[in-house]
Length: 477
Picture 1: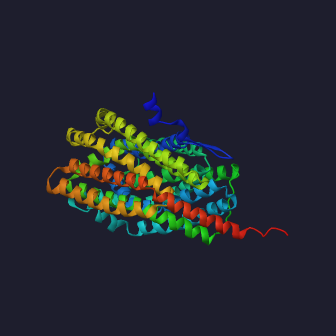
Picture 2 (picture 1 turned 90 degrees about the horizontal axis):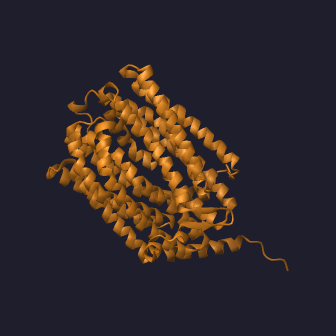
Picture 3 (picture 1 turned 60 degrees about the vertical axis):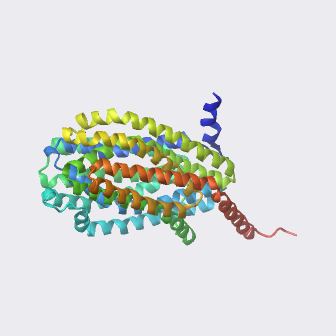
């Protein structure tokens, strides 16, 4: 029992504040279910598409999503910065500035999303061509991929607005709302998609429009409902754009998000490598990614919860508890990811055969990948906790530099070496992923152990207190 208590200390999983009680699992589980619901949208659409017109639309839809991923990730700059800045200010009990942060983030998120997604729509054809999808093997599907990418950019703008509302609610501790919202929207979208494909059964040239209309209906309704929830929860929103907090959100959010952007761009490049291997390896990658999502998502959600709670603790000045909580979460998620990865091997094969109706060739390509993925997910668990924890203390430059170097050197460079030069195919690509994830996880862990985040945060808090004292009125004589 002593070993168990050291491995999992319940006191390190809870924060008591004057207004609310936060816990790691209380934050992470609703976010986990929310992410699972969102992913089920894509997975169910893939399953439905696999059984519609001989699976013709699986490939063009997924290549369009992969192609748009860098811009999609970049558009989350505001929500990443909002999560960090708002959590710290709520920890300080600074309600007035919190209202300004929320209002400024909503404005910034809306404008930034319109700008970025307009670029995607305008350059849709060259983007799809860059992915290597303009060869003879993909000639028939190419125009559908371009069409989907253009129209999906409209949906992404609405999704980013929804994401901003969800981030605000999470920071205030209302994580269950996002869970209910996403699960309900997933169920509705599944029903609409099934009706569109198998009841209405549109001609091939109208299928893309059908997918987009279904998603727009659901996403717009979700955004409206979440905004009404913000009003009902009486979360203060100052709709006067604050230059100070606008700069702070981007100052923190942009470098913090560059690490995610580098990872996303590297994924796009590895997709390009996979596409060059042929239709079967690329289709296998699509299916594998959708299955292993269920392995690493819980760790990713604990990483988000860890970020929120460390931001609160640092704002409250309890750096020792933040340190111990962070280390405990790393141990916990490495164990969870390892167990789930082992279970994924037999379950993943069953999903491939009976869910996606995959061929024997694709199953044969996937089995060794599921085994290698065990090491990928253990390293990824360290990354999800390590990167989010460091970012929560505003140590964003280190995570950015490490991510940029590691993902391009290992995920892309080694993927080409192992996958193409050594002719290991998709297994070689996954081995490169393992090297990348494990190396970054180790570097983040030792960065945290050195404790530079403590010194920097103490210096920033001292500066904040000095600035606050200057704004206080002089005492009456």
